[in-house]
Image 1 (cartoon, rainbow, N blue to C red):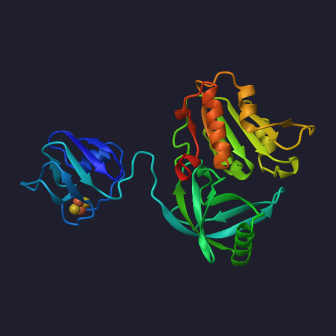
Image 2: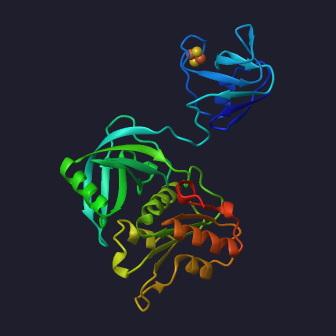
Image 3: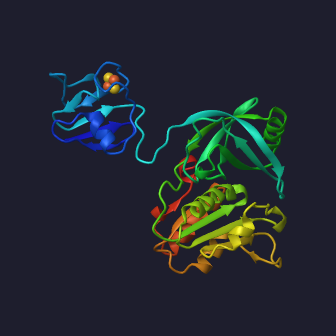
Length: 321
Ligand code: FES
């Protein structure tokens, strides 16, 4: 029997006689539950369609307890709090500001330390929300990777007034309230093929997380990093850059859009990628930057033979075309 869960959209293949909670956990979903015998009601869901059997009683609507309910036919349930495969629960932390350092190009590397105990869980490439005084929460990519445990890193461009205020707040309070993880342009699982990472400006933070995660996991496929800025002075210092340069499978490309004649390449990021990579059929692409940059990259790479599904970017979720 198939049980479809809303709002997650997960579809469970439930074996005859199996309880719905049991099937969901067998299939790897994280579900709200506690007693598993029908007493605590933590596993409650609403039956939207279909019939179930619960403690000897047949039902075709209303609340049910998934730990003691089994489907009698295909069903649809409204069951909040179910996390799909690879999805991690969002949690809030009050962190200490352990570092706030200018690293060039008006960019600040901010490091936060979460409280001891349960460390934050996230996938490489995800982002956090940080509380600001007198303003909405702001999103920043995590530049750290999950193996960093309690230590979280962000790269903040301190040019706009809102960012300058946030940096001042972090420096004066030495505490930050954050929520994480968010975003689906992540590496919950390492791909079986080359990675192409395309970052504009502080979009580098997300790629930093992906590269550090690949390093920690011993990823062997080629990784191509394209990092673009307007002027050479906009490149900022990356702590592990020298180590990255020595990795045999990591290829670093710095591209400047507004100045030719510096020591490196000039032009647009997607043009540099197209020039270098002739076979895009097997690559996995991650892009971080403005919506204009991300969609220009998508169009250029799809025009060169890449399937759109091979590319991931947070922009696809927060600024859909
Ligand atoms: S887990 Fe307690 S009622 Fe289902």
